[in-house]
Structures are given as C-alpha cells and as structure tokens.
Length: 189
Length: 296
Ligand code: SF4
Ligand code: SF4
Image 1: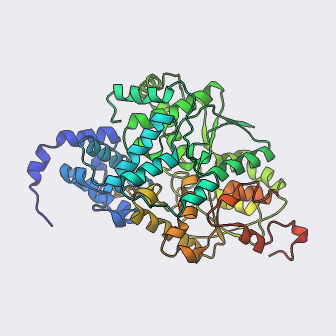
Image 2: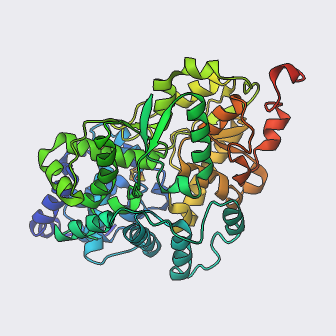
Image 3: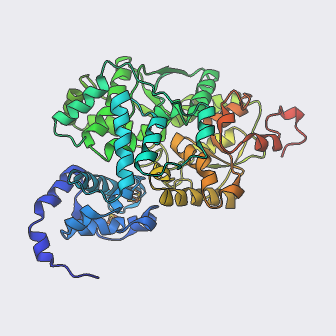
C-alpha cells in the first residue's frame, strides 16, 4: 500500500469534509469501519474502493482519491448498505454527494454512466418525460456502441414498448421552468 | 376507493404491460385510479446523481397536482415511489426545504397526502380478502419467487415492509393460490440502469438473481417495478446462462389478472421477452379449476 502524509491531507481538507457532511447530512465520524456495508454491497465486486473504504478516504482527508473513485459512480443507490449499517451511516447519500462534487469538477471516471445520466435529464428537460427510444439511440451513438441491445430493438418496437416519437407533455413549460429555477439557485444541471 | 395514479415514464413504454394489467385489475377491484394530468418524469436515478434540489423538485410538481385534488398517490414503479417518498419526507421535515421546492415548482406543496406503492395499496388497502373473493383461476402448483429488489423496501424508513425479508408479495401469491418460493435474492439489487450503461456489471447482478430463483426451483419471478422487469425479462437472454434459464417474469398485477380470469393478451403479456404462456398452460392455470386435470 502507498504511504500518505496524513497530517498534510488532514490540514488542507477540512472544508471539503464539511461540505460532504452538509450535503449528505451524514457525520463521517459515525462510521466505525466495521465493513458490513462492503460485505453486502452488490456492486463491490466492480468497485475500486469498497463503500467502507470511501468513507475511510473521507475520514482521513484523502479527498482527491475519493473524488477520483469509480465507486461513487458505480453505486446503484440500492440502499443495502444503509439498511444494514449498525450505526445508521447514510452511505448512499455520501456516494451521491461525492459524485456530484466530482461531476462539478469535471472528474468523470465512468464515462458511460455520466453520459447516460446527462442524456436522461436532457430528455426530461425537453419533453417532460423520458423518451426511451430517442435516448437509447443517442446513447448508443455517443457511447460508440451502436449495436448494444440491437437484438431487443425489433421486439420492443413491434410490441409498442418503444416509440419513435417522444410524448411531449402539455405543461406550459412547467418542467423547463423547474430546470431553470434549479439553475438559478446554483444547481448542478 | 380513489387514488391519484402516477404511472411514470416506463409504464408508457417498456413497462406498458404493467400499466395495462394495473388498470384491468384496479377496475375489477373497484379501485379508482385518477391519472395525474400531464405528469412529468420523477427524475429517477439521473436527477439525484446530478443535483439534490432537482431530484426533489421533479416529483414535487406531480405531488402538488395530486394534493390539489386531495388524493393520496399510488405509484407502480419502485424507483418513482422511492423518489416521491423522499420528496414528501423532506417537505414534511423541513420548512425551509418546503419553501425552496415551492419556489422551484412555482406551486404550493405541503405534503399532507400520502404516497403509496401500488403493491401496498392493493395488498394492504384494497386487501387480501377482497382479492381472494375475485380469484376464479387459482395459481395452483405455480412456484413463484417474489422479487422486491431495492426501492420498495429500502431505505427502511420509506418502505412498508421488512427491508431484509419482505412478505407482501409472498402473501399475495398465496392468496392467488400459488406457492411462494423461499430464496435468498428477494431484496438483492438488479443494478437498475447498469445493464445499459455498464453491462459488464449489470448483467452479472441480473444473472445472480435469476440463478438463485432457478436453484430454489421457482417456475417464475414476480416483480413490482418496471426496471426490475426489464432487467430480468429483456436482459435474461443477454446473461451468460440466459438461454437455458427460461424463467418467465410477471408483474404482480399480471398474476392477479390471470387469477381473476383475464387472458394473457388482455394483460399485455404477449409483450414479454420470455413468453410466459407455455408455463401457464403447462400448469393448466388458464383453465377453470373444474376443467383442470387435477389440482397440482
Ligand atoms: S457498515 Fe456503517 S459503520 Fe460499518 S463500515 Fe459501513 S458505514 Fe461504517
Ligand atoms: S447503495 Fe451503493 S454502496 Fe450502498 S450497497 Fe448499494 S451499491 Fe453499494
């Protein structure tokens, strides 16, 4: 394992820890590193740091490592860890808060997950709902996987499960307004 | 009994048979579902991974419309349900957040009405006794693994059932005359959108669930979420052992409909990727009990 200068890390990083605690509503010192979260996490097999390790990185001030972690993007927000944590630590909220901070800094270690999220929200802003077919086509093109799910497409199409045309809701721009108002309040959208 | 109904995006698209079967079954049970006019997407997992306020505001607009009618909201999709409950709870817990959300949606919303999962509404509010009375084609001999996944029962303060060993769907299966299967993966995560955006990870999660159901001798899996359905049904052929699994997936409303005498077509079941009709035929479930060869 690499060695870190903990004193240095702890010193310059107080504000970031505070930010994550504020955004997530979780006190990082509540975690006593028992590892139960990591044991039950269904995505841990694919993560670079287990959920327990993400908390540890934040506890000891290794924020850069946490911000670069793939784990916060791979987290499926399944809430298993939170349901099982003996100390009620809201790990999914921490994952979410770190991911948003990374996103704001332009750190996106999982490109396809980032693309998926962005296309989804663009569809919602434009139509008020997700247009699954339009989104999947754009996703496949932009992720350079033009044939992903191609074997499913005809059946989806002919059973009416996906439609070539988006359904635009008649909300007099209410949903667009929500996006605008969130932006006006400094939102990350 | 009347509820506001929030179908959510999937029920207009890949989860269309959930919508069809829900409407059929609700009508049959005298449950009135008033679809929220011009409802918008709840933001699903995309919004909360991007911005906390956006994730709260998108559901809030729908809830505010229902609140004007003074109706509790019934939500079929587990992910929408979880997002809507999160908004309701934040508004109830924080006057400041209530104000911010109202400013963003430009509507009043005080979270005085309830948000309920459709499964909860059917089983605990319409009630198993009412449902039992309507069963004409019991699911005799059908071994059903109830799959709850994540967001129906977690986080624990949002759910209406035990987060580790929920029973709501198992009890429903029993009421419909079927046999609930005891298995280990009923609350495991299906990976949600990972099957698309991170297939190497998502498909492995899906396969583990399907295999556990199979190993515990389930004939089929029953779900209460369009995303769980899509993953277990459409992506079943994409997992390594998928071709041999042949495990039909049902929405709980579909099996309710079958037991109440509706045909698979009336419930939209021809749209499944794994054709469930041969299984129902093999078990003679589509026949009236008196015309079955014998009770299995
Ligand atoms: S289960 Fe809770 S206390 Fe244990 S390591 Fe995970 S977050 Fe920390
Ligand atoms: S919420 Fe995220 S970190 Fe927690 S168990 Fe689920 S995938 Fe793992």
